[in-house]
Image 1 (cartoon, one colour):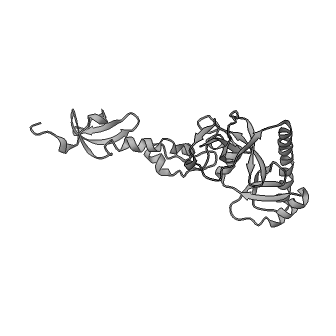
Image 2 (cartoon, rainbow, N blue to C red):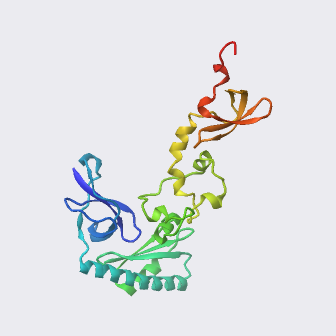
Image 3 (cartoon, rainbow, N blue to C red):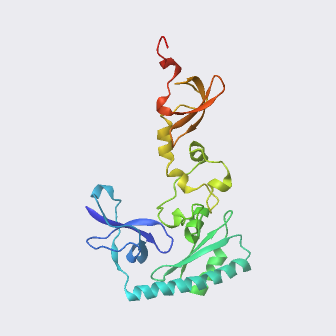
Length: 272
């Protein structure tokens, strides 16, 4: 059995599981964790959970400790220097006329590496830029191209729901979202209504999609003929959440009927 916690790496990195052993770390506090090279820090996202060995991907890295005063001072220094590095890199991008947009800069916890995140329409030859930055900062330089969803996660913001972006708070990874999910939930297919700050379809379209599909299986499709207490009619519209159906009767009247009260024509009893 492993006792694990979820940790979001640095300010806006991905969420990973770490073995916390017998220790407990408050949600919302930063901790020092094992990294591929040395140590790194991240934000605790959830309370500890006990997971069977077979459900954990190995090797499982460990939480080393909570932040010490020295750790906090280093993180503060890294953030300050990252802001300065962003200004330097931005100026170099303009100077070399590179078709890229710098999004964020991060120092590794031990300051051995600096990561520059950017977006671009296509591939960018940034070899000369890397050389400039390596000479300037005397550290290993990594330029990482990201997509618009990662950009939104890093920069954060307020979604159309009035809450902080899901990707910047609790989402562990980006799952596929398609226009069919909006159609089956009967949402207006207006790009401004169903797109997030990143310009892509809202991640939350996926949250209730399976529930809508499950309910929809129990309801008649539009255009089918059904029997109601007031006679035979054709389904004009359905309300999935209320489980009600709009039926146009043979006389042209449209009535609202609970889906459970409808029958198929072949179910009509003899002598009725």
